[in-house]
Image (cartoon, rainbow over all chains, first blue to last red):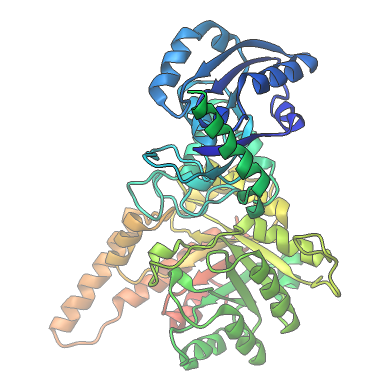
Length: 226
Length: 304
């Protein structure tokens, strides 16, 4: 399980500047397990969006948002409200946000910070990866994680190393920052790269004991209920 | 006149580069620096270039200062976190270093300690921002300094031949916004491509020093085209070097001494300097072991 917590509502509203119509994807997996995307949280987010004068074109729950097949299925079922939306808010871990961002031609925003990968057996980590950094940057980078897609985990753009769009570390690995640039350019949002976010806060990777207990407790509770 | 005064006065600036050795034999690098003295405005000292462990940039910069050669301290973000990088900037300042070139640095897997932890806590942009903060009297955590390194002169690099170029251009503007006051470029061989690049960043006011890497052979040119990001040596230059190499071979076969390759290399570098001079504010020569040919290169470029 990737533990996550809902970002402050002001931060989420900040991401949606200039977007009046928003579609919400909420994950029924880990993030519901730690109560950052359960129906109650979705309700809070919908109220906040409506309170700010926005319209929610629809909400969808996906069993595991990290699964591209399930995301594609949801998008087929929700074609109209997704098409109508100017932006998509994803309430899941960073993996789910990246999966949705890769599947739609819309700006995709993270609603949570992914914190901590618990010691859960049988977990298969495939691309796209989440660094559980505790301060999700996927809004800034067009839904591609700079910490996992870039070999140097750079936050402020490409180094001088990429050749033909490939990383200096391995010519078979695409440069994460070239991908981020191309994704943003396809959405007409590349000018955002001129806004430099604050330095990465490594302390955010260490979730408070209280949060850790609450997350695991929540998952155990959901298992008890069957 | 210092390097900073030179570029701020709008004069054509000349910088060169030395690389500290792997081991403590400093004679060769100090001899090179002595040779550059009076011929260039400042000498860059690389920081664990190519991710290979060696004598540090700061120690070498101080040895240069003691010999009356103005250094440019290169700092990469691969090997130190934000505490150590800021501390090194303060250390450099108290030892008399003023010019700092801020770089992200090659990844450890390109060097000779491939199993090392790559740090990259900061990158070129955030290191510039950290240094600019120190200049203004505050560290990255917002703490006040007891004495600010107010005369630091910060630089950055750009790769004019990168493909795609747009991510590099965004990064360049972020470097300038973060505090870069001068720019040195990756090697330039294609003057037309450089002109097009400069056309895209016309509003940049910081002086741009075009990078000149001496071609040692046709094989080196082909190697760079294949392996070095953003460097493309035009076929005509490769042909010139190849022909010079053939003439050297023929002379050696006849038992004669010949240095057509060296002469051609110097001639090419001189030509590049003369062609780049009207569009740039300086040149940065990276001799890669051919430091002894730099005086001839400057002469060929009309800078001696």
